[in-house]
Length: 212
Image 1 (spheres, rainbow, N blue to C red):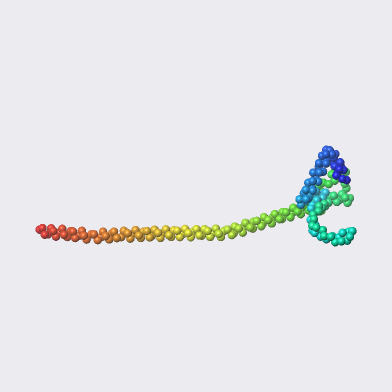
Image 2: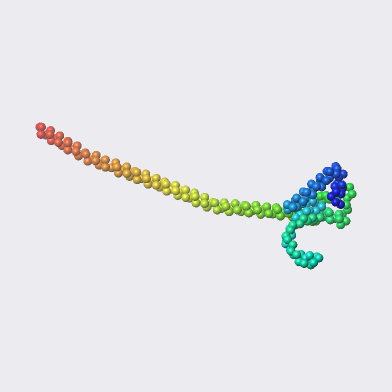
């Protein structure tokens, strides 16, 4: 069966030949683009399409027997699903009035595409968990390193505040001493002037005595 015959086979089911041709083209284009991009296209019960990388190797020319080096390349590969294999082998009967390939119930397939998809999902989940654990550990490490720095900064601020307070106290004490020193001579001077008054009183008394 070629592409044209495939279109004719499904034309009645999709509403016409043009619709069938468009549907086949759309499906094939989506598969090709996904595989070329490195994605795996898996259809449960039917099979999977994927891109496989082949390393550089040596091969032999079948006609001459000459050893030839083959470059590294990538090739598409199709793996039939378990349901498809069962139909081809005859272990499962092909339905007459139903879709040959459809989603099988859980646990009915031992391998094939579904098992591969499950393994891939499990690997992704494990990788995501490991990444989350690493991020959490990194955050804790950064927090531990930052805490001593914060403590040192707080201690430095307290020391600076204490030094400033001590300087202010010293300045106040010095100012008080200076003020006291300035006031002290004035009192002494006043005290020295007192005897002058007594002398004046004595002279007044002497004058009164003379007058008598």
